[in-house]
Length: 621
Image (cartoon, rainbow, N blue to C red; front, side, top):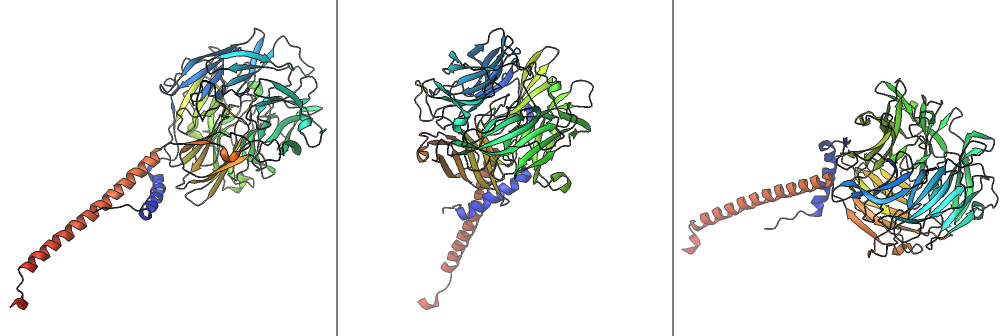
């Protein structure tokens, strides 16, 4: 006899298994210090950027030394599961120091190059006491950096790298140091850059332009849910550099039209942090996240979200474990070059479908320097006094204080150490005693019942030495959107623009991790869009994607989305394995029961036959 577990039986069992797993597994992960095991104990560096430098499909670290004069690359060895020193290095002149590191494939040869923004102590300051910024571009060959090119202009501030025309080659947005004139450097595959004014890309040819704010948090990000990146520029008023504005330029068929100019959320703001972007409430529209301080020392700190065309206060209670914390203001900057402004870095660490954040906070009650790293969890809001007419708020995870770090934390960010789709954490700290930086790694021991979808969009340009249909490196400005249904029936959407910001140690990852929450279902759809350079929409949508998978997308050829190749990699989780064990166990029990019943029925048949053989048949007489 053959026993079959039919789909009519299996599907309800799967759903029950997913629901009951919530009682079996803890819902929040803890973090384990793995600094030594991943080879970072002796690395006294400043983390500045991420990228796959040696084309092995692992994300490497671009870092600077204590003096900001030397750049090096730490390569991730996916066999040893640790970082090793690469051969690629850049050494600046004695009067120069690096302010920004922006990896990208600037010549479409499939190798990761690096754009360096730097300043020189021998330069002349302007009337505001600011030094000009310069740029150099170093070509990479997956082993080391070769020759470089210098850009002739003096820049107002650190650049925004973006794919302006959607040709899969990064371009550059900047403003002139002397005039404030905004322009783009348009790259091609011949290692040439063409300088074009921003006016040539605007609908109204001569818009009124305010000075770009220093430090800027400019971005190329989709802000109106049309799936295509728009230009976001942080500015100040011409005669008052303390009055900040946020310009939003919508991309209309490859041209920019100034759509909105936002003011600060409150007039009481004294210190303004960097704007980040995330789909905070899961409605498929990316929102602005803005940390601010109401005093110069950030004793009174707040976090705002710009969503639904208004500002919402989503966090202002910085009393943690009975101590008063706040953001680290510029006045208390721990970086020798003061190049790390207040920043919330975004990532869904608990995979519930709503992006969280990580930030560095200072204990304002302490008489000595006491700076630590905390996780801000995105949670639903049910208290009308705290919600401020918004559905979600931040809540500090009081168990996320990383006490293993004895030095003063400077920056913290998310990183997928083991490529399993679960976001771990990297923290940079600085010791005044040794005058050295340290880099710490914390593994996310997440064991919850949530799933994820990890997506990497790469350029598809292959190095000549590599014969592969799926190759390429960091690709900025493409927009990703997804939709799924959780076990509760709630529809969750998400939207992210990959590598939307590059200035002031943005530390954005060259991939996207969408938390899917507790879902027994497929992802309904995933859309990938390239920036517009004309009226043509360049977008492709995939449907019915398996959760806990990693999707690599190559938008080649850019003009023919239906031909874009992709590769799907499955990542079995503990939940999947436990569900499989439960299914096997249930099938075994059912088979055993049926087998026992079949055995009993067979015995009864044999008994009945024996009785019939001894029965007297009168009809035979």
